Image (cartoon, rainbow, N blue to C red; front, side):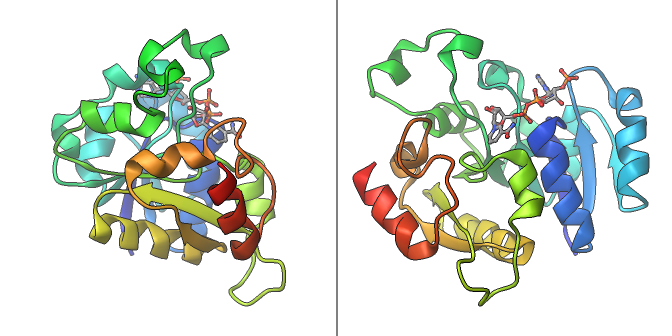
Length: 209
Ligand SMILES: NC(=O)c1ccc[n+]([C@@H]2O[C@H](COP(=O)([O-])OP(=O)(O)OC[C@H]3O[C@@H](n4cnc5c(N)ncnc54)[C@H](OP(=O)(O)O)[C@@H]3O)[C@@H](O)[C@H]2O)c1
């Protein structure tokens, strides 16, 4: 049993928290407004869930999930996340986030930007290409025909192993897309972004991306 700290507790944060609790993990949720605003969400998740500030959720988690509107990444507290594996679910939507010229030009990518903000953390890109509801709805036991596969990307092998094990436990196959910079292969508008794909189909989609 691990403790998963969530920085951001909206659609994706809550979907991940539900799966984590269902598999016996503790979750510590946080948002921008304060733990008291998460009382109903915590009550619905049950005794393995609690709420805290973002810094506390980050400090408490063995594993931390950053799942906020991308434009808010500068407000993620870096120090409590030092040395930890951090899952980055974020996507860049210029319509919501404003333009980031270095991403628009391809000089960098969403998760590399977060990793630069969290230089002492091991950032793994995951869960960004699946709709929140599908994290519960499309989960299936290992070996199920047509089981959905999810991609990961990251620069730290141990961190990727940890995240891959969690995704497997949640009910998905995992395809390693390579280093964090390769995470752009499953960003918005890429073939791997959105659809239900098996591991084989996902590898093909990543190659096209
Ligand atoms: N929705 C999807 O199906 C989906 C799928 C894959 C990836 N994503 C990506 O994942 C990220 C989260 O998406 P979402 O749909 O879950 O968003 P959402 O429902 O709008 O939730 C965002 C959460 O982030 C919190 N937040 C915002 N700024 C924060 C800060 N500075 N510190 C701590 N918490 C903060 C918000 O708290 P407050 O409400 O208190 O501000 C809220 O709990 C986005 O980048 C999105 O593009 C979404």
